Amino acid sequence: MALAQQERLAKIRVEDIRKAAIEHNWELVSTEYKNLDTTLEFICEEGHQVFLPYKKVRDKWECPICIKNQFTYFEEKIIPKKKNIQRSIGLDQATHSTGYSIFDDGELIYAGTFEAAADDEIERDIEIKNWLIQLIANWKPDLIGIEGIQLQQLNNKTVGVTTYQTLARLQGILMATCVEQRVDYIICPPATWRSHCEVKGRTRADRKRSMQTKVKEWFDISVSDDVADAIGIGKYINDKHKKKVEIFNWE
Image (cartoon, rainbow, N blue to C red; front, side):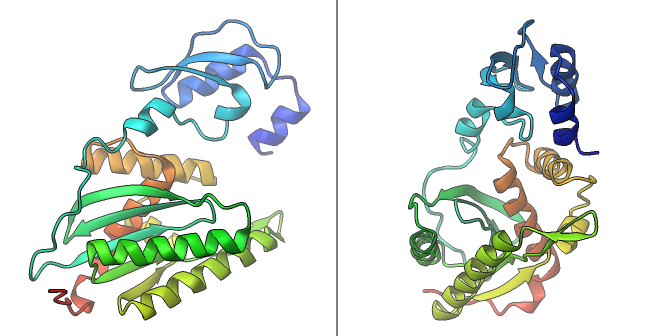
């Protein structure tokens, strides 16, 4: 039975939250807990003091301070592309928050997220398309890796059809934008790039944490799960598709 289902069937105790925090290298400071809306004090693995209700943290143990500071490792400026270097962009796309990474050969030179702000789905798609056009114009990539999509199975039943349809439409928009901008792209199936990056975990949350750990090991930076996946996709296309791309001289 999934953790979320167990929590719905049994009253959560402060000891349960403390144990969950320890499993994610956090510390629970608070000693009292009433319900999912109770604001609790935690210490994240980087030592930051975090005040969040358990319902905000139980599925995604992310420190807002770490997320805010995660890209201090990258200079906030566009790096000119050198000749005879393959520049690749990895995309972990979603209708609200899209993670992206930029590699020059095997070197990670930038990563970040794009937040689509519109309430309407189609308007968000347009925002993402315009953002990608600008990203291509600024960074001049030779190759873009777009994460593949897949239907989810739960108890031998297909779930999330509506989400799948939304992501399929977005994937088509990204592919068409790459074609319009004359940039090569490849679709990266999740199982394929995760296997290449040796991502482990039975659940989606476990795999997300595993990829974040890999990024920390490889580049010594702490990033959100969206950015971590984008870095994994970027690393995969750099490692596996480098020789298949004709490097384009943007100059």
